[in-house]
Length: 100
Image 1 (spheres, rainbow, N blue to C red):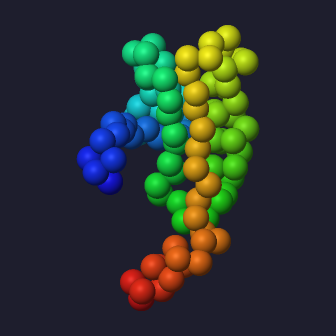
Image 2 (cartoon, rainbow, N blue to C red):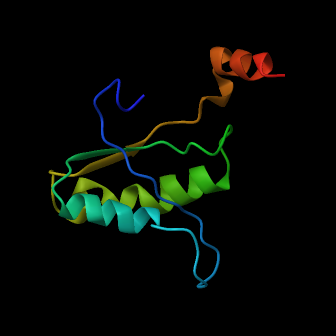
């Protein structure tokens, strides 16, 4: 999809529960990297979930996305948002049913 839309993408991980080595890069680090490399717009797409949950509603909406709000970081040159998970979208549900 990214090729068809001519969009770049990167993968990051969230919700690490302890200080042990984990999957990386973490989402906060990746967002800092993108901001420091003059990327202006980031849309987070939580691809591993089919319904909203603690890791999307709290980790992303409360902890991560607001941290990169232009008013918080003092710059209008970097915008972070995330899409909602389409679990209540009728076409999405029909697609899942078709896999059964």
